[in-house]
Image 1: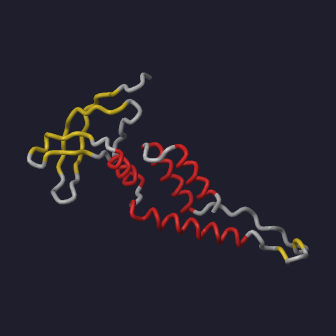
Image 2: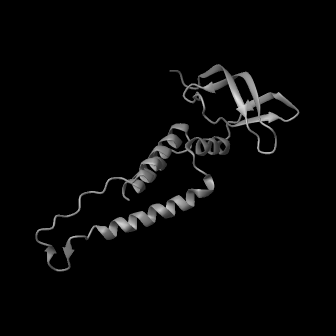
Length: 154
């Protein structure tokens, strides 16, 4: 691998503008060596509405982040809600740690402490989405690790 190397690939895109009918374009695009899109992946583009053959990949940070969220099935407007749900789940888990305990007496005889709860499907899905965001470059390693730790501590 060589730094800053680009790969030119013939690409078939289905462009889905918000206020216009969708259209398809087959064109050769250059992609960074470490960011070649996979089939079905969302790729942000800029195009001339008057001439759909005039189209380029949008490498702006905002466009790439939005595309990463879309690929992961995350609505960016729901990030705050997801974080709030994670905090609520963490608080519930903390409240359950004391099960089987009587204040001042230790563990109740004959009662074993609860086994570690299996991760909820939502947590697994959140981790998968985070991994996709990290792969796409929308999250740094530090951001990924911080969010992963929050989900795993639930």
